[in-house]
Length: 447
Ligand code: MAN
Image (cartoon, rainbow, N blue to C red):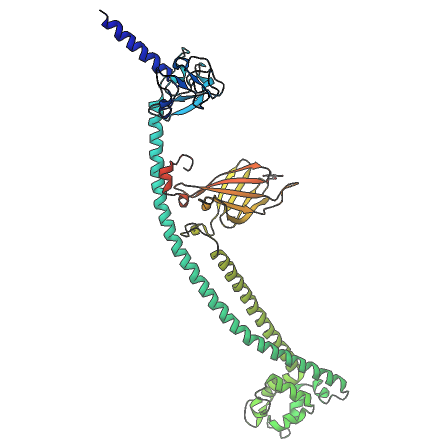
């Protein structure tokens, strides 16, 4: 007869005790030994166990009331079986609002809370699964990008070598052209001297020639009227030594050999006379000397400009190759790429390792910073980039941008915000930011 009563008592007592340990995580359960005295977790007080969760706060740390709202700083543990356990402030216990997905916080408020943990858990697991798939895909893509980076690196090195060769050739040309230019300049100087000399000589012996036609001069020289004149007679009309000198400047190799100058032989006809000596005497050699010198200077300038261009290209390329593209040069594929995003009225552009810009609807472009450095934590240096010294902010600092790199299957600028005036933060997603360690860490914040 006594047996059913005994069972009822046992059931009742275990029921009371299980209620007593409500709101406690599994790891803390060892502090709550049923039917023994309870020592506040901070060790400050020993109380009978029936004072645990009796809706009266005995312990200063609130540890005696984990399942009631009695202690001001207490916390209630939601077991949330099938989902993620978590703590809520114990003031939310029985406040008629369902906080724990297993409804355990509303055990005495008569609020009809549903246990939604299973659904939440399923949804979260599906999400994590797809994130893991994305992470795996991201890691595969990263590998491809690293391989592409290796090829790009080789290309750039070859380009550098080619440019260096071009520069060396240009240097050789420059050396020659500089010598030629100096020689031509000397000729012009000599010519100037001669001109000054000629001006000083009142009696310019060839001045009468200048005023006459080549036909009449040639007629004078062609005494036997056979349409030819001897070279020696021609040369004799040039009584001024300056003209001989002019000729020598124009045809330095031939000036000592008048026959060669006049096309060989001892005779010369009218047209040959006009083409050579006449033009030379009348207009020719000083113009020729000067235009030759100008041509030499122009050619020199052209090659100097080409040298400058190639030199700058080499400098830029060397600078770019000296950039830190990550331990496996995995970020090299971003070289010369830009990514855009429109946020409200602004259009943002990130050109990795170069700059960040902001363009307003009016088309005005503002620099939000130039490439500075990697700025992640010491463990994850390559997780953030810093772009500095952008356009100064009105009555403020110069604009700068911190770009956080997150793992994803695409490479794209995901967000740009301005949490402080002219201080911008951006999220840049790329497979290259995927790390195998994210698998263990969980990828919630990363993907
Ligand atoms: C522009 C933009 C803004 C910035 C203000 C500061 O409007 O660059 O992002 O806050 O200038 O004056």
